[in-house]
Amino acid sequence: MEAHEIFEHDVLIIGAGGAGLRAAIEASSTGLKVGLVCKSMLGKAHTVMAEGGIAAALANVDERDNWKVHFSDTMRGGHYINNWRMAQIHAKEAPDRVRELEAWGAVFDRTKDGRILQRNFGGHKYPRLAHVGDRTGLEMIRTLQDHGIHQGIDVHMEVTVVHLLKDGDRISGAVAYDRERGRFRVFHAKAVVLATGGIGRAFRITSNSWEYTGDGHALAYNAGADLIDMEFIQFHPTGMIWPPSVRGILVTEGVRGEGGILLNNKGERFLFGNIPDNYKAQTAADAEEGWRYVLGDKDAHRPPELLTRDHVARCIVQEIKEGRGSPHGGVFLDIAWIKEKLGNAEEHIKRKLPSMYHQFKQLAGLDITREPMEVGPTTHYVMGGVLVEADTQMSTVPGLFACGECGAGINGANRLGGNSLSDLLVLGQRAGQYAAKFAKDKGDTRVDEEEIDAAKREALAPFDRPVPDAGNAYQIQYELQDAMQDLVGIVRNGEEMERALVKIGELKEKAQKVGAVGNREYNPGWHTVLDLGNLLTVSEAVARSALERKESRGAQFRVDYPEKSEEWGKYNVTVRRGPDGSMQINRIPILEMPAELREIITQMG
View: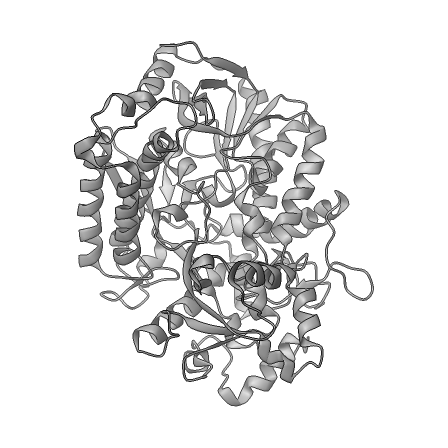
């Protein structure tokens, strides 16, 4: 095999979104040598797509908020199969991480007395999301990059990792290639942190960008780590449906937080007819009270548009299926209606939601201050990921850590909006801290040259395959996306998921035969072949986990098991690669919550 470049680091971070940057900053603060690898350009991270805000109980807008309420909201939103310790750490430490971000230069919107402003969001009892208009994720990335660039972090842009190296049972580095020239790089490290984001590109309609092919999930799985909660895919209720130029693009929950309402083709606010039992009773006659809540009345009921994402998404699907949808297969989201309440509605929308206004005006010719948007559910986030220990974020493989969307446990069956940004700050910081500690405590590792050569041969194998009869990687990816969207989507049943698994098996066989043409330089076809393996792995994990969980809970809704099961509330579903390479599904009991935390949930209602 040809020679490869070797890079030596104490801690290697794979992924340069909010979680990866925060982990890198923390690890480098200990004086260790830190490497940061990103699949695209620095600053292109999917974190910039998180628009609404950072959930943290600062209590700047409503003094009744505190970590206990945030913890209770997170556990309720996750239907109580979350890792309670992770949710506790997150709720307690999120305010400090937000204030830290502010100290590093983040320019938040402000209350009249100069504190960080917070807005309403679905599933949160009080206004909790610290925000920068509707560009919060962009400001977070800017701040973390500006701060991190001075820490001496070694950054490798446009580099894709294809294999994790091991020294016995312990992680010892990674094999990667640069996307421009196709040349291999080997990263030798004492600890590795995965922060690669999600798996949205396994589905046809998604808010996720092209990088989201489940790389970290598949790398961890192939290295022997367990995955957990893979059945829980969050379909954000409001992605653009029309026009085609913006299909799938996210419409932030902040639109609803600022007064946007959901309407069917009859002009009805259909969510009033779908209020869950544990939500304060509200009817169409109470619409005025919901508006008072938006304007800051602490005692008013929340509008139903701010129910949890899984509930809103299912209600939208029901309207569409029953013939009350919009002309292009969605429903209407209307923020323009607030002109009835505010004389300066246009100014208000442009100030509060500048990205939404400019984005859709430029890309779709749509003026959201004057007309409604056509929206529908779009694949947005995966609650499942690498099984990690709550305090340290280390996986079941020693020396391998995971955080952000790639890690799992905090969200349970459904994530609350805004928790992802505070999650990546809190748990990214912890991943970096404990990866550095592991590297210091455990010392050097060795890499196996034969393992490196095998990984390189496997990556180059597509160039030696016959192409004509196997189709191409893009066709296989499209077929996979269609199967996942149609058979393992928002509404599921066992028979369809069995069909999906058969289809995934067929596509696996095709993927083993599909080749790449040309050479390694600037070859997106080759990159797509390599991404396929990851997409097929995570798709199988989602389908098998969803089939195993015979109930409806949170983001999983099964028409053949439409009720939530008390028995299934005792388990999480895990996925592991078996000795023969097959995927093994297991159940692990949920650890009992301490009495004091159970009491908090009882008190918060």
